[in-house]
Length: 125
Image (cartoon, rainbow, N blue to C red; front, side):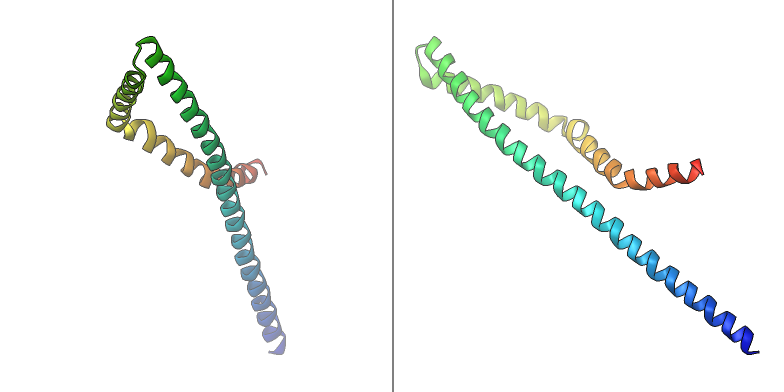
C-alpha cells in the first residue's frame, strides 16, 4: 500500500512542478509581450514627435512661400489651413478603413505572433 501512496505522492509532486513551471512560462511570455508593446510604443512616440516638429516647420515655410507669392502672408496660412481642413474631413470620413482596421490588425498580429511561432515550431516536430 505504501508503494502506491509513494507513487501517488510522486505523481502529485510532478503535477505541482509542472503547474508552477507553466505559470512561470505564462508570466515570462506576458512580460515579453508587454516589453515588446511598450518598446514599440515608446519608439513610435519619439519618431512621431520628431516628425510632427518637422511637419510643423515645413508647413510654416510652405505657408510663408504661398503668402509671399500672393503678396499676403496671411493668405498662405489660410490656404494651407483650408487644405488641411479638407484633408482632415476626408480622413475622418474614411477613418475606419484607413486607421482603425489597420491598427487593430497590427495589434492582433503582434499579440498572436508568439503563438503562431510556437504552433509552427510544434508542427515541424
